[in-house]
Image (tube, rainbow, N blue to C red; front, top):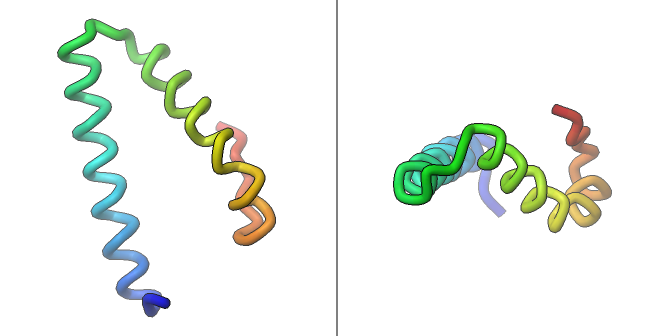
Length: 61
C-alpha cells in the first residue's frame, strides 16, 4: 500500500487525468458543464458503495 505522500501524488495525478479527459470529452462532444457533472456523478455512484464503507466519504456535492 502506498504511503500518504504517494497516495497524495496519485490522487493529484488521477484528478489531473480525469480533468483532461472531461475537457476532451466536452470539446469533442459539445457536452455542457452540467452534462459532464452528471456523468461524473453517475460514475461515482458505481464506486460509492465500496468506497463509502472503506473511507467514510460523503458524496454530496
